Image 1 (cartoon, one colour):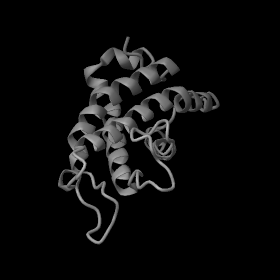
Image 2 (cartoon, rainbow, N blue to C red; image 1 turned 90 degrees about the vertical axis):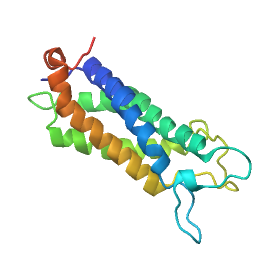
Image 3 (spheres, one colour; image 1 turned 180 degrees about the vertical axis):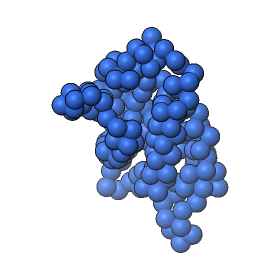
Length: 172
């Protein structure tokens, strides 16, 4: 199958919107999000919040913001860039390993975009604030989400959506 740009975008949105969202929903409470202190990182559901704001809800905001940034920025920047670069290859497609490794620059860009105050769900990042995206939690969340969605797009999706393979990756 040689995916077209519209097919890549549709596939990205479908896989991240279904499988990525379900995985993020399941894995978020088990992330280590508290900044390291004397006890090190703690799980999100063990953090005691004095202000009455649920740390689980705050963490869900952050993880789903990362998922949304990955979907939107990927559709607007990464997919067109990768599609342009593929035009220089004779078969007009990447090997599967390149698709897997493309998660590295996408993960780095999503991590950096999460630290932009406008895109961060907390919105009040500054030099005097302790709001930041913990690297171990982010790497675990993004890495596992990327691998799961990549495995689904390269395996079961070809079985459940037979026409998807023959229409350049388009679902509709």
